[in-house]
Length: 506
Image 1: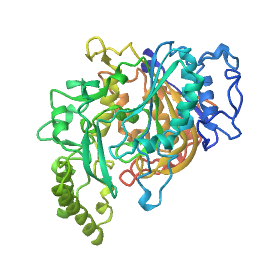
Image 2 (image 1 turned 90 degrees about the vertical axis):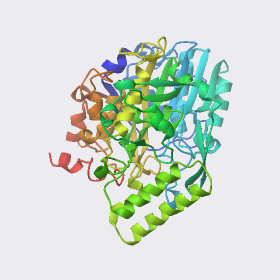
Image 3 (image 1 turned 135 degrees about the vertical axis):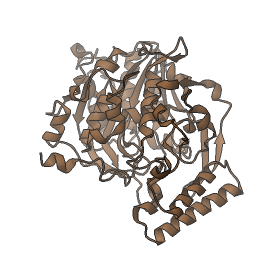
């Protein structure tokens, strides 16, 4: 997987900011490599863009536009197990209560998955296995998510056209929740499947270690501290991944181009957080506000602290009357805070680490990527050498992106962008620039390039090269030529990571 560390290329393709609407999302043009394929009367920008991404990556360049073109043949071998990791965060836009029903900017679109599937199957040459899998949030209705993406129709098409290649769709969550009125009122944990998962221990290689001085309490919204405190100590930092994922031959990361309430942006790096079976292995913040050593939310008054105390008590309860009492008490505090007009500090949406002062989530994000890429299958442990057992690439879906209170309540933005890369840091840096954000303020990026042990790149930000059907060749040219868009960050990041005006006046 040397390409991961050394290949600084990012392919950037612009196309129509729209998606085909009819599963299984056939291409709108007849291509030489698919002479017998069904051609749709409906435009399919995603299929066209995926094909262009492979072309600009110079994959199987000599056979391009012929029957023999097999762009993923250098990455995938017949008989391989290939995992596609989309962004399947939820079956619905959680902003429904205030009018946001769009899902195009929420999840990786089915037409992107269909296009990638075709070329993966071609590379497998009739033998092998493809897994489409993710761990959405605990309240996601998996059946509704499958319907939204059109995966049943895609699978039916796939079985008919590639009968000897196994296609499996998997929900990798070990924990789910019963949700009423947008609030998880009961958690259901599946312990029977835990044997199919493996704890990868980053130990003192974890980026969380500098935070473990004195008293510290890591947390993630809506989950108890119990599993978290056991997984993350000064000596052990464990992440739970399914064996399908860590023992696959190839993983193709299919992130969505979105702002993120806790991390600023979500892309290839953050999409790997969805590899973890139990969400309470994932430090998202340290409990409390800066005045008491936390980064869960900004400093506030006594009522603000009391509100979060009640919510924390709620998270510790799996179900029952006591849980209901704590939920009600927290909501009552929130209502009073709004009534006395305490401005943004009355916004519960900037709790849970959803603000620019979060110094925890970027560390978790980098940890997970390093845990995956440096896991030695033979030793069943982290190695100081990059794994040679797995191949990786990322394809980012940004035809329609998500902004504002993303990733769960995104407002759609017509971006018209698709990207591909072999390095997630390089990809996410270009994505952040194209979103009109200041890369220097996105912690998982700037700290990712600064990693001393278990690095994710042997090159710097200034070495990232852009190719494709655009005129920019590096990140600085995105700003200089003003080809970026104006993604609006979430409330907790607004005014802290956009440097659009600075670039406009340069």
